[in-house]
Structure formats: structure tokens, C-alpha cells
Image (cartoon, rainbow, N blue to C red; front, side):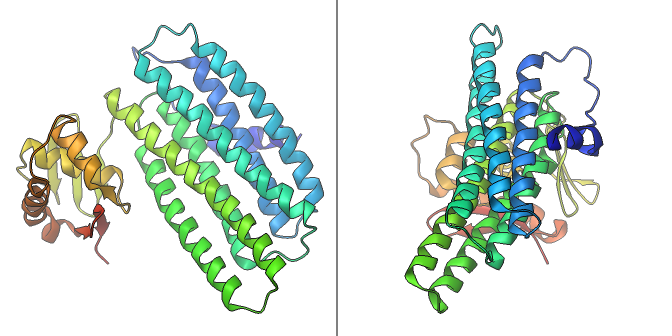
Length: 322
């Protein structure tokens, strides 16, 4: 009953009108949205239990029912994809989304099970915070999937998912530090380490969903303008502006900036930048990437209120200044 009530009352259920002529997988996306609603309901039940608003046994029972329902939806979705005439890339993306949504629910159910089985009485603060983060992730997932159905406007939601995953990592580190520097016994440390890692795994899978959705929309040509500070990149027009003034970029610089903006606040690995900008057959000097990033910095950083940071041995990250 809880899920039906949330579906009726939540403003997140208002979907954008489908633009004419956009091919889609309507049945598959309807099922994905059903799974996303199950994730939101499960995350909400878990967070309520962590906040002390309901018993863990009660929340676990509801979450198990939601997981069983989502399993059935996933089977229907895989069956619906078998005869699908759409592009192979679309089908693979939809299968990946199904699997990751199932993984998020599995992580929530596993955390709820441990909370009930261990008869937890007083959750640690970091677990409560991670429960709230999962609810926020689930809300963003629902919105991102609803918009991806029409191949547009997902990036505001996927960037939120990237930021929430970052916060989940931070809270896990805080939890481990508190557990191992406090006076808890070994059993308590093991229990809470396990539970917090399960919760953080759920946020990781949410970010995996964000990555799939971004690629799906980009490949479909449905990207909207990407912004950070006074910087704006329009993929359709292949234009970049800072404060409304055009900035001349080479094709490689434009592609680099687009990828960094899509993952604003997250590190994009060097290998991925080289693969997606220079192509999978590129075997040249990797310093070419550093050279192009240097040119890009000179053209946009100072005026746009952004900075492109090098993360040693890993890649680059675009952040807002201040």
C-alpha cells in the first residue's frame, strides 16, 4: 500500500511530454520506472527504520516484498527486450539499467536484513546519514529514468547522483574512522562495517546507472546544454560560451570539455578520456591529453569560474571555484 500511496502523491511522478518522432522503448521504460519506484520505496522504508520511526523487522519485511516484485519486473523486462527491434546499443543499455537497479535493491535488502538479524537498537549516525543519501539517490534515479525515456534532460539528475555517490564515500570513511578509533567491541565494529559497506554499495550502483543513462542519451543525440558556473556547452550547436560570449575550441578540446562537464565533480580517468576523445585505436603519447587540457584551461578556467584539476596517476576533474 505504501508504494501506491507514494506514486499517487509524489510530484516526481509527473513526466515530461514525449516529443514527436522520438523512437523509444515505451514498455521497457515503463518497467524501468516501476523498478525505480520500488527502489525509492525500499530506500524510504530503510531510512525510516534507521531514523527509529519503525522496527527493523517490519521494514525488512516490506523491503523483501519490494525486492520480489522488482525481480518479477526484471524478468518481464528481459523478456520484453528479447524480440526488440531497436539498436543493439539501446538494448544493452536497458539490460544494464535493469541489472543495476536490481543491485541497488539487493544492497538495500542486504542492509535491512543485517539490521534486523543483528537486532540493532541504536544505529550509528553515519548509517542514518547513508540511509538519507540512498533516498535522495532513489529520487534522482526516478527523475533521470523518466527523462531518459524521452532522451533528454538527464544531466542535472545524473550530476546529483555523482555528487551523492561522493558523499556516500565520505560518510563510509567517517564511519570506519569512528568505528576503529572509538571504544566499540570487535563484534560491533564488524557488524557496522558490514552494514555501512552495504549501504555505500547501493550508492555506487546508483552512479553506475547515471553513467549508463548519460551514455544512452548522448548516443541518441538528445543531450541538452551542459553548464558549470558561467560556462555553457551546447552539444547540438557544438558551441561553448562563457558569460554568453563564444569561446573557440578545437574538436578535441570540445570533446574533452563535454566529457568533464558530464561528470562534473568526479574524476574522469585518463584512459577513458583518451578512448572517447581520440578513439579506441589511439596509441600515441598520453602527454597529448595533458597538452590539450592545458590549452582548455587557458581558454575557460579564469573567466568561467571553474577549474580542471589533475588527479595524479588517475585523470582529471572539473570543479566549480569556491
